[in-house]
Length: 83
Image (cartoon, rainbow, N blue to C red; front, side, top):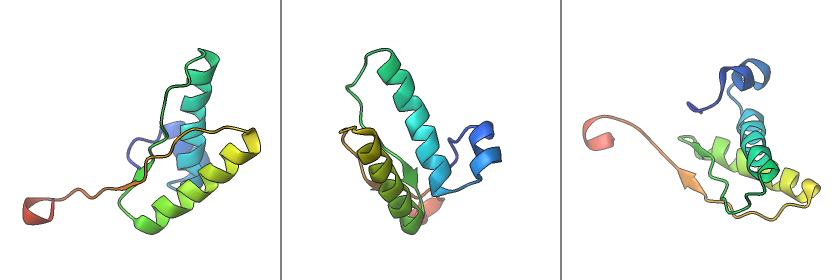
């Protein structure tokens, strides 16, 4: 969750909810500019966190009546052969 803003981190912590709130904020900016050609892509190195985040995001999108594509991705950073 390294790309979360300090404000989001201080309010939600390093959590799936924080990931969702951050993604929704960026989507709101795009939508305010009448730009709808985007994909949600939230990444976490922990698959459980990623799944929780996407489930929360899907629920919020349903509540808002949004229909944007989701890019599912689990990432891992490391050194050498593990990276």
